[in-house]
Length: 417
Image 1 (cartoon, helix red, strand yellow):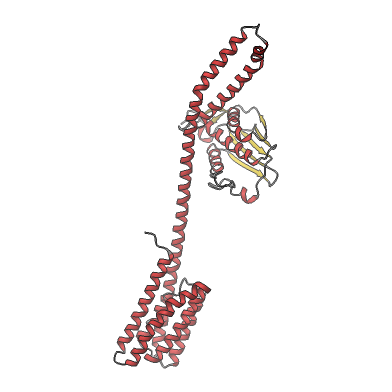
Image 2: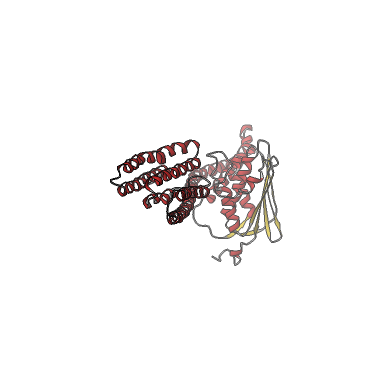
C-alpha cells in the first residue's frame, strides 16, 4: 500500500500529541494532591497540543516550516521555563527536553543553531531558578544525542528515499523502453506480413506485364498507339514494377525477426536498399549519392541497413523543402567510411551531448521514441566501428560512420560463430 508524505506527517503529529500528553500526565501523577499544580498542568495539555500541532502546521504551510519550527522550539522553551518554576524543575519535566528535540531534524534549515539556542535558554533559566546543575547537564547531553541520532536517521531516510525514487525512475524508463521495443518488433512483424502480401500479387503483375511486352515486341507492324506502349509505356511500367519489387524485397529482408549471423555483404547494396526504404522521407529534398568502391565486408547487413535507414530518415526530417541530403561511401585505409550529410536545421551543443542517449528526442510527442540513434550507436559499436557527428544550428548536420572491413570478433570469417 502506498503512503503519501501527508499521511506520514499526520502520523508524526499524532505521535507528537501522544508523547506530550504522556509527559504531562506523568507530571500530574507526580503532583497528585497539589491541585493547583495539577490544574495548571491539565490546562497546559490542550494548549500545548494546539500550539505544537495545529498552530505550527498552519504557520508552516503559510510562511515556511523553518520559521514555524523556530517558533515551536521558542514557545516550548518558555513553557518548560514556566513549568520548571511551577514544579521546581522536576525530573519528569526534563524528559520533555529530549522529546521536543526529537522533532527538530528535517524541518527547514538552521536546525543545529536552533537546538543550541533552545538548550542554552532552558539551562540558563534552570540554573537561575536554583535547579541542581546535574539535571541540566544530563538532559542537555541526552537532548543533544537525541537530536543527532534523529538528524542522522532523517538523513538516512532521505538518502534511501532518493535511491528508491531513482530506481523507480530507472525501472519506469526500462519499462518504457521495453514497450517501445515491443512496439517496434510488432511493427517489424506487420511490415514483413504486408511485404509478403504485396509480393504475391506483384509476382502476377510482373509476369503478365513482361509477357505482354514480349508478345507485342514480336509484332513490328503495330498501330501507332500500341507502338507507343511498346516503346515507352510498358518499359517505364516494368521499371516501376522492378522498383516496387526491390522495395518489397528490401522491406522483407529489413524486417525479418530472426537472429542474423555475420556474413559477407556489399555495403553499397545495403546503401541502395536503405535509400529505397527511406524514400518516403526524402521525397521533398534533393538526394545526392556517391558510392565509392569499398569491396566486400563482413558483418550483419540488415543491421547496417538499419543504421543507414535511421540516419537517412533523420536527415530527411531535419531538411526543409528543396534541401539536400547526401549519402556517400568510400574506403579509408583498413576502414570504410559512410557519411550522411544534410542541409537541415542543425543542432546546438546541448543536444549533441545527449544525442545517443536512449529516450532522448527533440521531436514532438508521438513523432519519435528517442531510440533510433541509441540503436544506431549500439550497432556501430557492436561492429567494432565508431560514429561521429558534426552539426551547428542553421548549418545542417553530418553523421560519419567508420566500420572495419571485418569486425574484431569475426576476423576468422563469417562462419566463425
